Image (cartoon, each protein chain N blue to C red):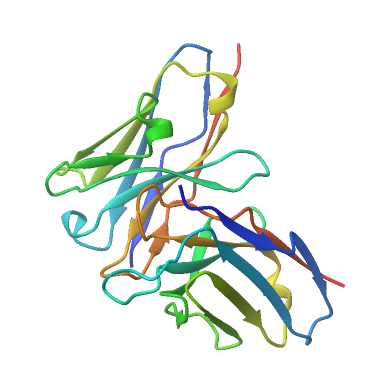
Length: 119
Length: 112
């Protein structure tokens, strides 16, 4: 069965960086794009960007271009998102999600990882 | 960016009754391939979002047929018939017509 397992919660200091992971299993990793979505506490969903695990091609929401960097490690079926120069505005839950085939939407989601930025 | 406006922001429903949620797009979501790029997701309390509806009116795998969705190029409605306790949560509409993908603000469904 398809599963996206994300790394644990992170407490980071302002100005620092954090690298979140998303380990895929149950399907061929390189066949599906991985997207990342931000959800601030009690708020809606914001699309950050996606990566094509096969080619490494990325596409970012303009709002997150200087904030997030998406990478993959095909040898471990893991996608990563690094967030840099963290501020309190970056405190949120971050989800990785798989875009289904064709136009079927985001069909599987990771459990989410809460990032707290605090000194 | 495409703005998706949901209404109402919250709805309270008696179990067994029906509920409807509206989503209005600032731009037509009909793609050049004839696909309406509108999706519905449910986020149960403390859980990740899950896909309910894709391409405006298609049920995702495992979603009960109590859920249905319809609409035009810019106005969409999610209907839940015979609401059950497991339907509690926040419903989001989202699009994939272009980048950035965006989502509505969400509609919280509670039981009376």
